[in-house]
Amino acid sequence: MSKQQKYSPAFNQVWASDITYIPMRRGFLYLVAIIDWYRRKVLSWPLSHTLEADFCVEALNEAMAKYGAPEIMNTDQGSQFTSFVWTDRLRRSGVRLSMDGKGRFLNNIFVERLWQSLKYECVYLHAWETGAETRDTIAKRVAFYTQKRPHRAHGGRSPAVVYWLEKKDMQPDQQEHRVA
Image (cartoon, rainbow, N blue to C red; front, top):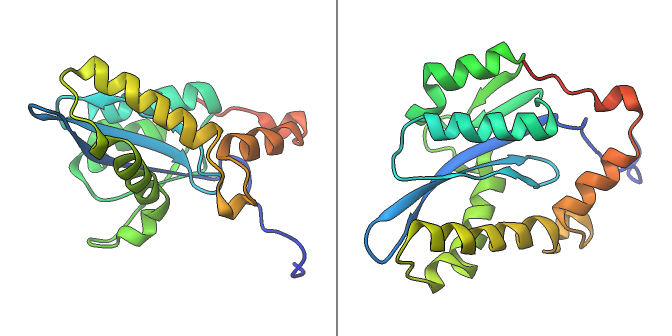
């Protein structure tokens, strides 16, 4: 590959997922996000009152229903991502698992950047009373991050623009969804 050619991995090649907590006026919620690793597009992001694996699988199912299955799913070694329900869902869909080593947050840097942007530009500026309030505000911020916020890695384009421009350029056989 010449220096002029830009590397663009296969569509849906690698997704990443992670969980963070969202403080509220009283208590907190947990947020899981699934993103397209190269394009940085947030594919799914449910909130939960608990840290059980089910809400992570819900996010995975939602992302796979909308976008097909990735080739590889990268996560940390949290109990939700090592649970049977999570790993079984990925294996049944033909997705290879990639798990970061302990303390290797840089392997999942793109989700960590999402958390940093979300928390400093939104979460820490509010003290929400209800889960509905939290969800509505985060929905707006995630939509902005994915659809409008310029990303330097994409020449100032948003993740959604990059994602859909590349998808438009694909041949029909490259757009096949592998969902079990």
